[in-house]
Image (cartoon, rainbow over all chains, first blue to last red; front, top):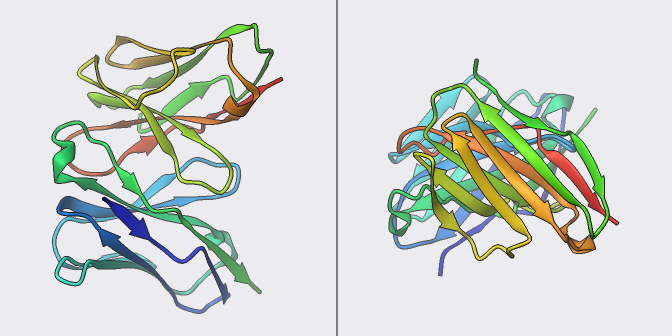
Length: 113
Length: 112
């Protein structure tokens, strides 16, 4: 089967760095994406890793290692507004052109003062 | 215009009602999606339209009926829903093989 595993909850303080891991079991996929969703809001796209390595976008970075079946989202200089749920997602090769994403169950990040 | 809009924001309906959810995007995206999301869960794919044709139906009950009138619009017609259908209904669009999907703000649906 295909599944993505993430920690259910992470707690950190303002200004800190937090890493949210995503491990997966899937035969092959186009890339790993991360989405952020605030309570009551819609998911918003954060980052995409099509190739192994690190992608950096401001305070957020994302990493993928296909050989280790592993990726992570790194959030630096945490702010209260970063409190949200974070989902990793992949589009498996067998989805063809149908663009179906497989989603992790999400990580609820709480940033405390 | 880089956003997906959805109406209404909130909807309360009885089990015998017929209602429709609407979604619109003007980014030229050729794939549009309906998702259902329960609290503390990831979005659950319902339907995908690609180039205005239904390409995925995730075994959704027939009381949900999607429609894509043109490349910018997506509707979800609701009829004879059950209380367990209460959820946040999200529309999204995407272009190309990139995983990035743009989500609308959603419709919070309550079925009484």
